[in-house]
Image (cartoon, rainbow, N blue to C red; front, side, top):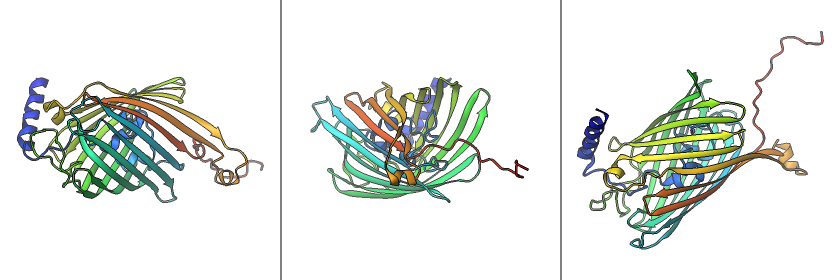
Length: 353
């Protein structure tokens, strides 16, 4: 029965999208290859299997940053190599950098990405420079909302520009049976002009490519912690993306942490249109992250801002993209200051009286 439903759904998607949906392979998520966390699916619409938000969270859901208390800085780079000699070039790369600044009324995030993937037969994305800026706010103890605006410039296979907006929401359910920190997230991305004048090779190599990322892409997902002890935590997250109702993409992310310091993140992406056109690789991605605190002494500026003690996460990851493309990634994420995990105390009278 499940196979029959899957076949019917796939046939329906093919019928509706045969002449109108053909972005290049990787075109739906070219922003998600520039760091180990993104490469392994840890940056999901719900904040990952084990929740973590930073400046680059606005890529998938601008509401994820609403509860952040500290200035966040992150940077990442991914080296791309293809062994397919039919490609005109065999080397590429992708970088990102971002900043998150908490204000009294909202959280601001800024993000810049550069993607250089000139792989004619695998990821025919060419060169592009992209940016995003977002605002988020915590509406209640459980609900957060956010919006962002982005754009970019692409060249190599024709020059083009993009300009668009995103909206998103995150609902923290809390405990759900044996699942802790259960979250539900949703976002609508790419509301505007996408890259439409770039001549590239689409998922279907024999049809004309369509704009990418796809206009009005809806993302929804859920995540939670299934094991939570002082030593080990295990989380699982699942996202679904529907690019303008013309394709179905599923992202699965599993994470395990030891003593809240060492993390292993494993992800798998199932893109129905790419699977149908045999442009896929089902080998999961993997990333390793290590979080630690550090002290900076004799710096008056950092001390005055409460940043003399901060946290840093360094990471490395690997993913085999589209059979012949190998992605090796490294990243660093810094949270300035230490998180305030104690609730404020309220005293109604002087305890000394």
